[in-house]
Image 1 (cartoon, rainbow, N blue to C red):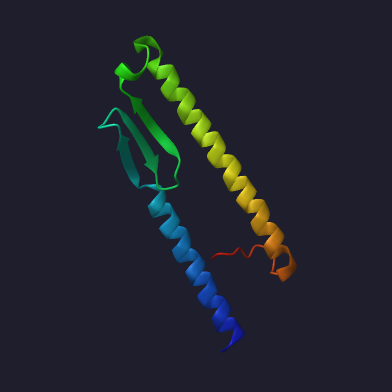
Image 2 (image 1 turned 45 degrees about the vertical axis):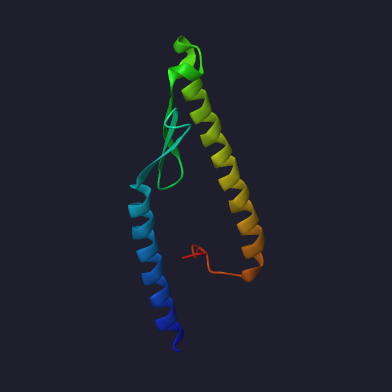
Length: 106
């Protein structure tokens, strides 16, 4: 197979993956627990966008604060996990000698 043709195909695949990632980011899903007493909304990037806790599970005037704190803690943990994964990926890919700007997976 021609190297230039292979590089062109890799670039096309990278562009398609970028489009797919943008589309996935727009997805929004909702999960529930406790017969609807707790509801969590995530986007396609697994970022928590919403949290609802039924007031019967906590002091009524503290529910919003509790929801905000849980969302912040979840998103903080997710960001730390993503950073750790990026570091591990860079360690693994560091010895491959890929050209600058070329990312795996495409």
